[in-house]
Length: 292
Image 1 (tube, one colour):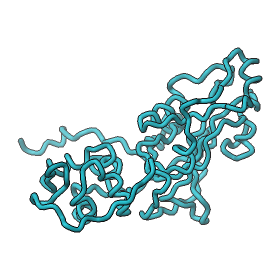
Image 2 (cartoon, rainbow, N blue to C red):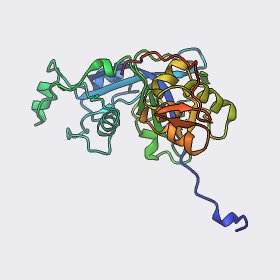
Image 3 (cartoon, rainbow, N blue to C red):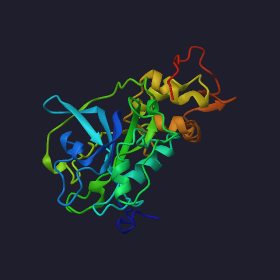
Image 4 (cartoon, rainbow, N blue to C red):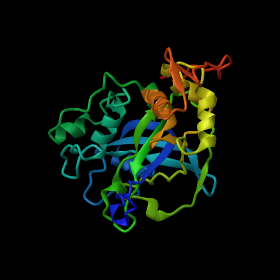
């Protein structure tokens, strides 16, 4: 049928994405969070000794215009002002669930019992140690984090307080080789809990950007589908490259990239190996192991 302006689709939700390295993951007090400038100040009525999950990243793809590091926080309170456990709409649950989707138990727990007395005085069991927590899978590991873009005209938009959530784990040995965006300091970017919103990045879709697609194809031809995530990391393919709204590297790691490219006719998969026109390259890009 002819073009119908009344049939225009709803706008796709914008999202902020950043490639980051985790700087810290620990339980501290609210007062410590203020001292470390994760929170701007101690909110009225809050207990300064209450536990606070301090989870902070440094952006590899962004820097402030004064040259300083651009930090991103997924930190959050574990308890409400009234001493109740935060519900599943809040950061602790959302962050834990996102990491669990990557096979990582991210909650650091309180193995030293620093907050046992506080928990007891408020009628809670101790935070305790998390037997599944492995700090090496979180601290100094690299991730792609994502959060929804807030409505600039709505100061109460919940997206302003959404935690950046990990959507891909890139490994401790990952080396960022993409473009670095310079961000101008703007206090409106600081949310109520003291965290700064990630910056938007200019992404390139390999399904429409021939140069970006050529870079990806050059890297993956001759390699097994199951190895493509490590192949792209080793080749230094930019994390600004996307396919169907997802990071190309993340799609490769989840096993969907080859299928999308094959369906579009850009590659063939022969015996689980990526090829062009059914012919496997004899000199593929070497791959180095990236720790999980």
